[in-house]
Image (cartoon, rainbow, N blue to C red; front, side, top):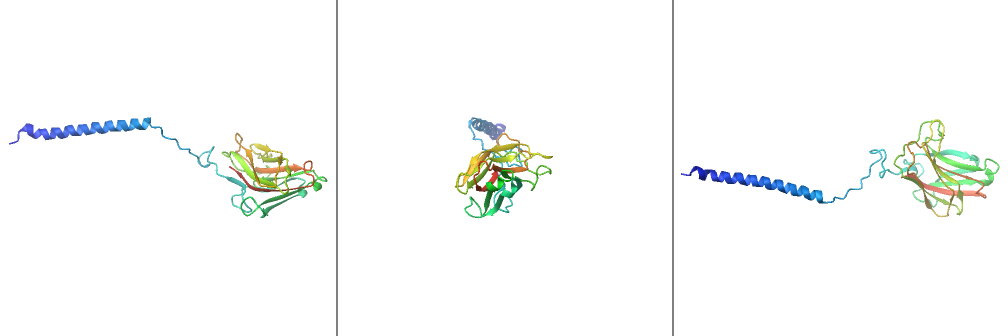
Length: 231
């Protein structure tokens, strides 16, 4: 017959083995946790979509003023003619030597015409069209770091006194204004940038504008614009 001690010995060995396994597993978990603590894990460069974060510092999607004629991405309308409006023409379906896409914008300012009028002119891209601050409109562009656009002159040397973002007043004024200029255009396409960091872009109905005057335009100012966007 098997004695009681002999019967209990396998069970005791099994129990001790189980305890050792548990202690060993626990020690392994502790070592693994310690290793993770000591390992420097690189932090991902997380960017947020504008809909996910109000500030969206690195995830602001390109927001177009002009991509191509009739493009769904366009958010503003070149409807705010200023100054000597009869001396300015805009063709936003121009198709020759555009920077990108199938169309760009050709603008002509007749300085001689302007000398008998207000002697200056410009165009605002507004939302909604013809909105000089009397109606609600515009967009919350918080998160945009800059506005970029491409421009060139017909011959080179054409001067634009100011490029502007915001600045619309009235019952529903823009939350800020940014101005760059004067700018002397070259005959080749060149990208220009307006720095928007630190600006209040919570309400912008005047998305983009240019102005110039007969003081700096000897005869005719013919220039081209393309790919205007917040980013």
